[in-house]
Amino acid sequence: MANDRNIILCCDCEGTERELARIFKVLSDCKVDANFFFVGETVKAFPKLVRDIAAQFQAESHTMTHPNLRTLSYARQKSEITGGRKCVEDCIQRPTHGFRAPMHHMNRDTVRILNEENFLFDASRLYFRYDMGKVVEIDPTWFREWMPLYEQLGLKPRTAFGWFRLLSRCRSLCVLPVHPQYSGKNAALADGLRWFINDAKASGARFWRIDDWIAAKGLGN
Ligand SMILES: [Zn+2]
Image (cartoon, rainbow, N blue to C red; front, top):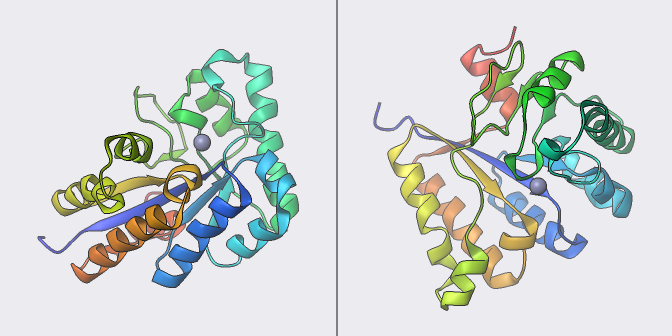
C-alpha cells in the first residue's frame, strides 16, 4: 500500500539536559508519538525532565552507564541492564519493558538477559542477527543522525535529515534514531528535526509508540 508509511522514532537519551529538553519540545510541538530510551545516569542527573517526558511519550531503558555491552561479562551486562531499568522505573513510577543497547552493540548474553528479565521488546539489533527468543525485535533502520559530519561540511541542518526523509519515503516502516547530543545540540539542528517530522506527517506517514506498533501488528505473546 503506497500510503502505508510508518515511523518509529527512538530517542537515545545521552547528552545534556538542555539538549534533551530541546528534543522533547520539538516532539511535543509536533504532537507525534515517540519512544525515549533513558540511561540511568541521565535519570539521576535530571529526574524531573525524565518524568515530564515519560508523561507524554513511551519511556524505556538504555543501560545504567551507556557501556559497550559486548565488552562486558554476563554479570556486568546484567547489572547494567537491570540497574538502568530500575532507575527509570523508580523515577517514572511505572514498569518498563523495552530496551535499547548503547551504540547497538549486543551479543548472545544481552539476548539471554533480556529474555530472563522478561523484556517485551528490544530495539537494538543492527549489525548482527540473533535469535531473540520471546523478545520482540524492532530492528533499527539506521544508526544515527550525521550532524557532526554535516556541520563539518558546512551543510544546512535540514540536509542532515534529508537521508531520513528519503528512507521514510521508500520503506513502509522506518525505525529512526534521535540523539539529543546531535539533533538537540542547537536550535538550528532541532529545527531540522522539526522540518523532517512535519514533512513526514504532511506526506501521510504515521508515528508510533512501540507498544502500539506491537499491539497493532500482533507481535507480542
Ligand atoms: Zn545511546
